[in-house]
Length: 210
Image 1 (cartoon, rainbow, N blue to C red):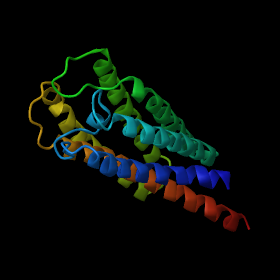
Image 2: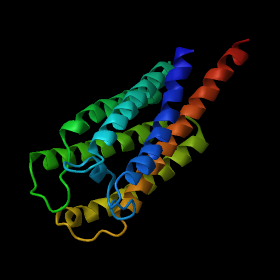
Image 3: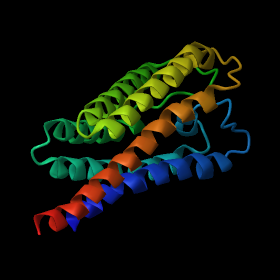
């Protein structure tokens, strides 16, 4: 039962993050989900920073629970065990985000902005590695799905990176919010699919052994 609860945490974490992007953004009248990044919701000076940090803490705890669930579910599946470790690392990195916020556009670039960029790079790397090892953990269908997820994440993540200097320079970025949310969204969906696959496998195990 505990294992199921931990795996369900993966589904809940993705649903919560999507809800955060909708609900928190609605609390800032001048915010545009199409032309502004997710990180700007928690930027220093943003009116939505306290609410985002509160909900992000819940998201991080759910991710840590899911990572533990994946780790326990791995058994003799080494690639899946690595996936669990990477998701746990992803969650631990999440605990550091409140201490590395970006500033609002037009503000002076400081140490926290640099730390924010470093954490972003590490986070994306962990996401890609988790998906990559996940591709080797199951059959052909999940492998192809994971590869497609990596390709989408790389393409749209690159587009976000190209807009980075424009964000720092307080220049117009009409689509950065869309491209970033697509790159994040495919990872959130992959987490849900992985959780469902593991829940089905866990449910089938007693029947097979019987």
